Image (cartoon, rainbow over the protein chains, first blue to last red):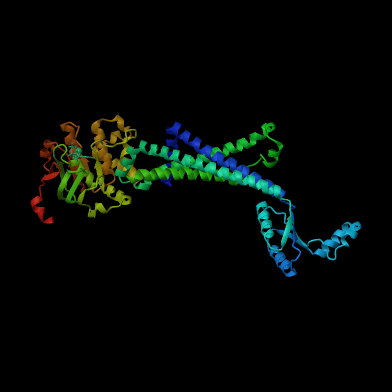
Length: 298
Length: 228
Ligand SMILES: Nc1ncnc2c1ncn2[C@@H]1O[C@H](COP(=O)(O)OP(=O)(O)OP(=O)(O)O)[C@@H](O)[C@H]1O
Ligand SMILES: [Mg+2]
């Protein structure tokens, strides 16, 4: 505990001592994490957007003509197992005809030409309206059912959601890719800065080793320093993210209404902020551990 | 306490800084290590606290073969040995107190205990009145004594000093050596490298003499022949 306190004080002193280089460091960490944060925030909003529109999703599957009743029953009970389902309605070919006639009695003459109902039997599914029923899940569920042999075609209008999800995926991948590169860049830079700090204090480290300090005793302050720097970077990035999201709506002239509809510009979920702090600390820890490893090898 | 068994040290090919050294220093003894410049005195000391590794041979410190000590446990050896460096290796922007406290802080002792130990060390070298001075603000002779105080602060079994009187006048040198005698009287094994023959004559201690890495004179060589 004493060592932790002392290391913290030491770390803060060191960060303040080499102001320029350490602020540069903080800058690059914050930039990395801000990028990560922005992409995270956009993906998050797109997901919420698709979620809201996934309510009242209905899907109708039209079955092939020669399907046996046993197969239909099997398919229905399989669908019923899913937690996503609110209601499932099976309509046989005759029921479809009856329905049709109820709606359009004047067209009865058309049907008289057929000796059997011309309408396909169908399975109609209503999905539960729950937060956890993500559009992605519903889409993959529907695609699963569609693969079945007995399904002729489907009627479901969530193609737009699919498109949004594609965009979201694209943005996520771009975000991960960009943040990944920046992640390594910041590790590389902090690694070198901490290596400099170690060299700067080489004399002191030598003395500590000669008088019998354990390796951990010597390493600990540098690890704390790295972690602290990362954490600070995370805080700054989070702060910048909040500020920009609060400020952007006041320049709303520049933003299309469509964009405003998708992105709420209100609150940032805590999980994104926590993620920034977490990744910041990780960046700091990894860099300091690497530079220490290098130093203590020889 | 200190044992060398056929120890060789080569920094560069075909040139030995230490050549086939055998010696044994018992606990509580006081030794001078002498020889011309480049004879290998500093190298021999560095081998003792494992700053350098022998090219060949075994070194025993306090019954431990130090060749076998892994990096992670090196601190245990270092805690047995107090080292006084030729260039002092003090932290010049810290106070005298802080410098002497380092070996104790590193061992995780309580503040009150550290205070007590630092005070003891300061009295031993006669520097109580300089306790809160910044180290760069005191004289060379005083810095030398701070270095000794730091070496003794952690209560080591062995004190090693490399030219501790190197740049001091005779009067001060005698004073410094008297401090080492006091330390030795408390049961600490002392080994001092020096090329100052006047001092060696004055203090009549056992002396190890090196010449181009070879042991040329060693007081109890005859008696201890059986060891090898
Ligand atoms: N790091 C090193 N690399 C190469 N050669 C070295 C190294 N250190 C010492 N030597 C050589 O080893 C020999 C012994 O050096 P050492 O420093 O032990 O002598 P010394 O007796 O302490 O001399 P002095 O009285 O001048 O301090 C010298 O020839 C020196 O040049
Ligand atoms: Mg020397």
